[in-house]
Image (cartoon, rainbow, N blue to C red; front, side):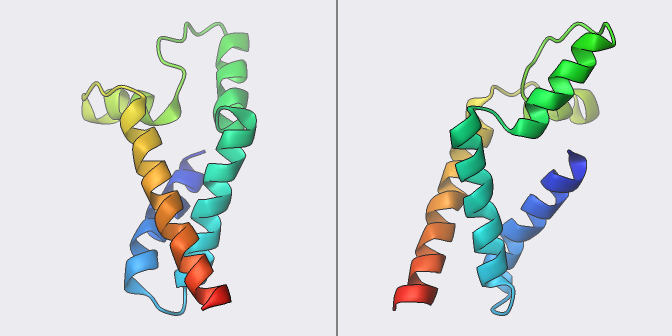
Length: 103
């Protein structure tokens, strides 16, 4: 799960900084948003929460990003900022892909 987050954050920077990797970054971010929309949650979050429940851990937060912010940075954030950020990057990615393939 952490690897997907690291790749996604890297893609967010590369979409603006690298002409060569811009298309791959845009494709990754667009697919990430689409998968989350199809499943309702990130499939990795669903699997992680299932494994945590099986181990007997009581889940306070269901989403990965707010849980990491609270655990590692001591900051409590709601679910919606990560959702809004991902949607904004989806729109940016979609515009990059449309410009590349159709213009």
